[in-house]
Figure 1 (cartoon, rainbow, N blue to C red):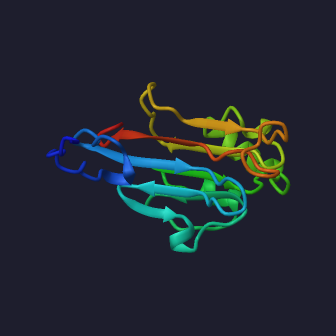
Figure 2 (spheres, helix red, strand yellow):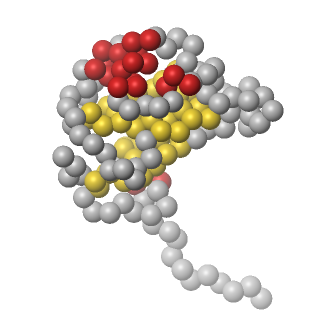
Length: 170
């Protein structure tokens, strides 16, 4: 006889976190694409900003700026208002057509990996403009395509960073 579990099903958290974010903080999840059919996603406060379900994900670097509208990448990044959060994820390839000015703009936001990106690298990046993120928040992750280790034929596995950002940062 198997015991019957009487515990309730786990409560779903914002952006599918395993645990809830503390009060007065924002939940986020950045997930790079992987392979042909694993699309990149950006979730903020339980709203899917970029992803397959929104129809807004594309090859290259996908960027979401909270409370801001889009434009060409370099100008888009530079025009983000002060006190903005910028979320970036790659899908398929984000390096082949990436111009030097866009690399400069992303590097100015604190990226350590933008110049190391290779063909079909999986990459996620979180930046703040006009304020500092706490030192414990993971800001960037990269996984290069390597045919001896790729999860998908020609593509590395998707990667993600997630966490909680305090709402009252200055």
